[in-house]
Amino acid sequence: MDVGVRVIRGPNWNWDDQDGGVVGTVVKPLESSISTVQSGSVFVQWDNGFIGNYRVAKDGEHDLRIFDSGPAGKSHALYL
Image 1 (cartoon, rainbow, N blue to C red):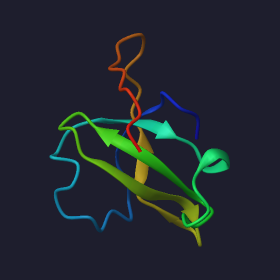
Image 2 (tube, rainbow, N blue to C red):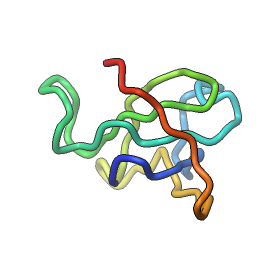
Image 3 (cartoon, rainbow, N blue to C red):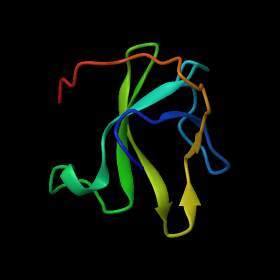
């Protein structure tokens, strides 16, 4: 999943209300994640400001779904 992709909760979401019920943006993909992050995950910054690490096809689990917002979007500076 690439940086800038807009996402919402996926079918295996287990993170209560971390997303604030809003859309988020992938801010750091798997291949550039820090070494302590398990493979199969990305960092997302939700529009409520929260940043978290979520599974993307990790052991068949999907915490996220792609949200097609077309040309609209929200950019975030990365503060990790």
